[in-house]
Every structure is written in C-alpha cells, then in structure tokens.
Length: 428
Image (cartoon, rainbow, N blue to C red; front, side, top):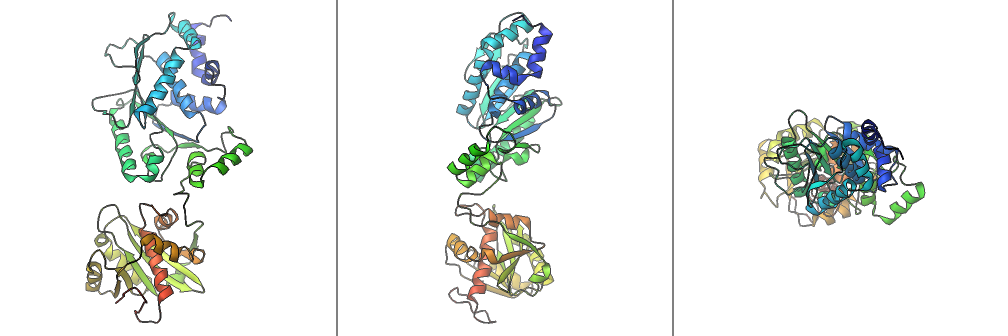
C-alpha cells in the first residue's frame, strides 16, 4: 500500500471514522456509527445522543477520543462515566487504539514520527503530539464522585453517567444533576462543549439537564434483526427492556396501572359525591387532590397534583371543589392530628376526617387496581397526576395520586347512605 500524504491521512480519519474502526478490529461499525462519531467530532454546541444497549456507542466514543487526541492534540478533554472503574475500561481502550499499528501508521503519515504516550495511567493519557506547555493531560477520565474544582476543558464527554441506580434512587438522580451543572462551569468559556451519550432510566434523571437527545432505539439502528429483538425481549423484564432497548420509562416490572382511559368530558365530574386531599407538609411529597363521581359503573376522576405543601395550594383546591360542585372533602388525620381539616373548616369547607390504618400499598392494589378498568380521567386532570398513578409500584418514591384516587374509590365502595358513615374507617 502506498503511503498516504498528510492531507489524505487527515481526511481519512476525519471523514471515515467507521473505516478506521474496521482497521482496528471493530468490524460491526456501520453508517449510523459514522454519523455518531462525526457528530461527536464536528459539533460546536452541547449535544446528547441516546442509543440502546449494545449499539457500540461507547466504542464510538473511544474511537472519537483517540482521533481527537491525534488531530487536535492541544485540546484538553474530560471523559466521565459513573464510576472510576467504568472510566478505566474506556481509558484502557483509548490507549489500545492509540498504540495500535494502524493508528501509528496514520500518525507517521501526519506527523512524520511515531506516537508515544508520555502520560499513561488508569485515568490520564497524553501523547508526544501535544505542544501544550501547561502540563495538563490531553485526556482525563473521572467518575462522578471526583472533584472537578479548578479544572477547565475544551471538550467534555459523558457516557452512561445515568445508570440503573438512578432508576430507583432519587438521591442518586439529584447527585448526578449537580455534577452535570458543575460540568457547565468547567467547560472552556465560549468554545467548550459537552457531548453526552447514554440510556435514560427515569423521567427525572440527569438527561433532563442535557440538550434534547437524538434517540436511536433498537428498532431504528438495524443492529438487531426481528428475531434477535424478540429473543432480547423474552429474556428481560419488561421495564428493563423498555429502558435499555426502547429508551422508554416503565416504572418497574411490577407495574400495576396500564393504559389509562382519559379525556372524558368535564360534565361527568359535576356534582361528584366526594373529593379527597392527600396532603404534603414539605419535603419531596406532592399534594394530590381528587374529585370522584361514580356513574353507570364508571369512576370518573378529576385529579390535580402540586409539588408543594398543602398550605400553599389550599385556596386553589377549594376553588376547584366549588367550581366543579364536588361533595365534602375527605382527608386523613393520622399525621397532622386534624390540622388540615380545621384549616379547611375555617375557610367554610365541609370536611370528613378518618384515621388510616391500612398499609398504603395494600390499599392501592386492593381498591384502585380491581376497578382500574372502570376508572376514567376527565379533561383537565393533571398529566402528572395520571403519570404518578401509571408509574406506581410497591417501592415507588411518590404515591400521592394513587393513594388519593384509591381512597375515593374505597369510600364510594363502603358508603352506606348520604350521611358520613363509612364502615370500618372511623369517619366523622
């Protein structure tokens, strides 16, 4: 093979990263991977790429990190994954690419000398191609727990900083969001950029902080055929397959409430028998307000949800109840010793209190679940209210909406007459 000129070698690495990958032994790379790597290399603004598992996105990141170190050796690059061990894996792969004989060939064509690693450890790489005098490594890898203070980078790549841990832990989700905010502070002002790759795990994970993602699910990449997709789906729990391969959020394999019926006319809720408040008093809980009317075997529900304490939305709740001509407000008195009921009565509301002695999960699955097929949400119901019900499972973080809805159905099940006698629940 005749040696390439310098310009030819640069053009090849710039324009055909997937072919460069083939030379290195990554034979599964195709047109879509070329698009990803060119986006990583050429974009001038922050970008986000979400792709399904086993789509070779991390391989693309490794190849792009390597060619950037060759073609733009004076740039300072930060690579971040969830843990330090995850980082070491990619740094090791970048090192293997840089020292590969095919890579050495291109470096020789471009620079007239072989590439050598002058900094080579588990978290940093620097080649002899840079003439930067600051002494900062070309590539620095770090987990999300490391300190970033005082650092500044031209390019920042995050890869899978959102993982299955974020699916179950709100604390973890919030921690990663804080880290991502800090990345904005350490990218070089004006010219720095962040490129994010990964898979979403929760509707409130750190991807909400990132630019809107370009998404490639398992049906769009062509990497798996129909039979392979079917086999994957059969071998995995539904929620994991949805997150890993469809880039969708399903709360859990124990998901309870599917396919909500929505959009019924608001008239179906007028003159409802009752309303209910599941109150929050600070922290991360929501205040849920439900109006429920049973008619023709259907439970018509109007639901509202506020991420605030009940005191801060009480007047709006009262306004909604009056607007829709709903019945008395029911609320439990376990936690607040009757505070909410008294506050509502002072504002002219008729209130029924009760002492709750049923396990919340059991209450929801034994009241709301059996009648889920008969539940119809009327227009105006908050989408977040419906989503919280559909995302509910035994260990869900938020249960305010499903709890409120289930209480309404339980009351209507148990009601004996127009008075406030509800058997077994201590109402007054």
